[in-house]
Image 1 (cartoon, rainbow, N blue to C red):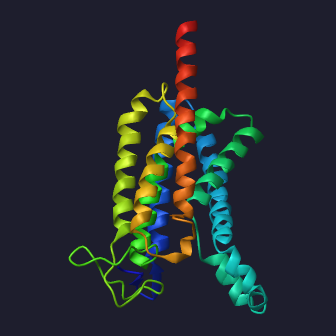
Image 2 (cartoon, helix red, strand yellow; image 1 turned 90 degrees about the horizontal axis):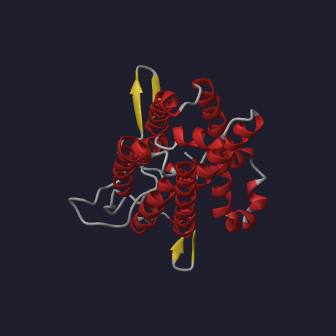
Image 3 (cartoon, one colour; image 1 turned 60 degrees about the horizontal axis):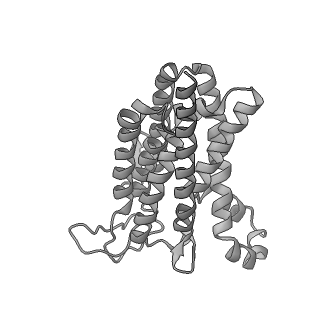
Length: 263
């Protein structure tokens, strides 16, 4: 792991740097796809801004919900110090909240400026796992979102992490999820996108990532992500998004067949 790098007098957090790189690449991918999908580049660019705002808000809201019980229990201590409040606002993020918030942000842009939502979101979907892959690499560098105790050589020490245990080797689940997200990106960009007029890329993504996240959560060890009964918060959400993805695919295919019959 490598939490920070130093260039001259500047110390840069690798987590933020990798997310920034992933976001930039995701923007390039979306803009490149815009001409293919018949969506103006300007609309893609501005919808990305709306989506980015939604990502930040949604990710933070779901994070707060996952820690709501201890937050209420220690509320009096929290409000006594502005530093505690700033720490809460600055740290902690749940991907699913960011995903839903980003989709809502793009939807709001489409409604405000009266642009069809479906082609807009089709353009942007392949960029999501690409950005997410870089985000997970950032998690690995920072030592957050760490995995279960695991023997070497696969298990790794995260001694420079401010959050991971320092005395045991842990499964690098961040790298596993980063790799699976990259595979999903290539499938969406080079495979499924070839028949995207027949299939909902959003639906396909929700199914694939829902399965990925449900499985990788079994390898997570950080308690901060929250849990209920036998599953983590993200696993329960995964159980909901997979059928939603199936519904979206069926709806889009029915629309495609209807257009074919008309033609």
